[in-house]
Figure 1 (cartoon, rainbow, N blue to C red):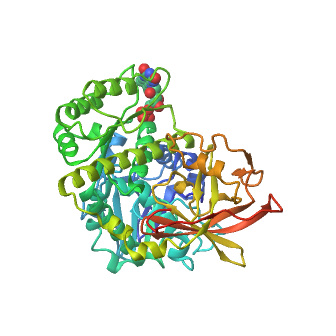
Figure 2 (cartoon, protein in one colour):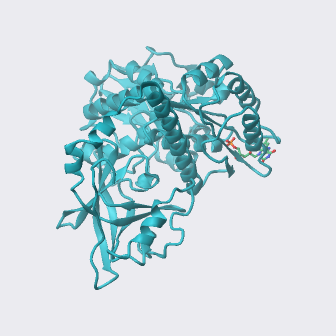
Figure 3 (spheres, rainbow, N blue to C red):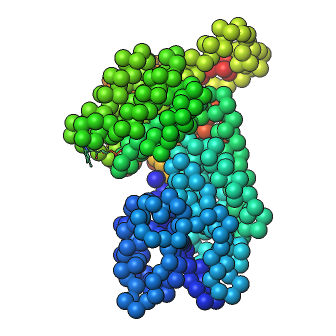
Length: 551
Ligand SMILES: Cc1cc2nc3c(=O)[nH]c(=O)nc-3n(C[C@H](O)[C@H](O)[C@H](O)COP(=O)(O)O)c2cc1C
């Protein structure tokens, strides 16, 4: 969350009644309850309810005067089960009259990660409250002006990357259910004046563009699921293994392979069997509870060992507190069953740190690449046809593109406690004022998720004749999470915390201002904040190529 985030709640007032839509995380519960008139609320509508929000519900209820009438809580059936209280459960098509002409209309839009999602439409204002859908983790300004928390005047240019990143991390791994959720909301966009999500800006000016883009993102994911897909099967009691699963899923999708996520506590053996038969690889995650993996994971493993072909790769992961048997047990069972692993087992003590999440993401990418390799081999064994890529490789066009040269550079970046780096030659200055440059980063590159809008990185420009060691160090294959710098001599910048390659000719401290999706790469536009020449003499290392089909 480079750009912060917001937890959004909304108050909708009718002629007679007032509804409070959604509640913030428990850390904001008392500030929130103090900031609103809790006694004036007649209904609380929960579009999403995680355990962290239950505290806010209790705080709001406690803050109501003793003589205030009982508030009615409206939420989906899964949320009601989570609360274990007498509640009014919402069905699609139901309406809540607030007096006068004002009525709220509800649509349930469940996805595996958020089975309790309810979207609420207010026909009077034209606002569609969408819970997690169309959210972004970005903190909007709070000067108190009405338009502060919206995208007005900024729109897609400012928040497009944040909406896309939220989608990639949270919804891409469940593209089919996300597509179904979008279909259930299909009647609304034509009548809508704004989208009010659970996180990030209220979307007014970019609402149509965002809906259009969402449809395209979902369609692209569903299509890639038809080519290759990987199952991420997990259970998680407190969210730690689930956070690992999410990071692995992100690593898989960024390598162009679709993910089918399945929480095995909520699934039947038949669903697990169907999933494992249609996917091209899998990984399975579990916490250690009482020295074991939870029973649903053990059942899922039984189905996998019985039904899955051994030619596809596997992976195991899980969070633990002290002994951590679950990961070893899962690994042993799959090994005994004859499976090969695409990545080393990932074990994490309690909540995963940024470094662990990075290991998960990179392991997901490794799994995806291994799936693609196996599928490609199978296809070429079958057809022995020349692929489109290699015919481009032999073409004049490829040779012509290959005449474009770039400066050899080391991109170094940092995200919380994790560091990363890559060798780059698709680099170019992009503006005099402000000084800016672009770097093209392959979508599956580990450092890609360090280069989101607002992130810092260093571009270390290598010196001709002195570039070999840095190239060698950065081009060797890395294990997920392995120190990218190896034997390279680096110092850490006091200003942005990113590495400076001391052998470089110069380095530039940059901040990402834009990202543009270009086929299999992201073109990252960055403003140069500071730069330093490390050597007075010497020329820049240039990368000459024979063809435009490789770096
Ligand atoms: C009832 C209970 C039993 C646990 N038993 C173990 C155990 O035997 N060994 C261990 O390493 N951790 C144990 N833990 C710690 C959990 O594995 C740890 O909290 C983990 O982060 C939970 O992952 P999750 O959030 O994915 O459920 C236990 C936790 C609870 C609440």
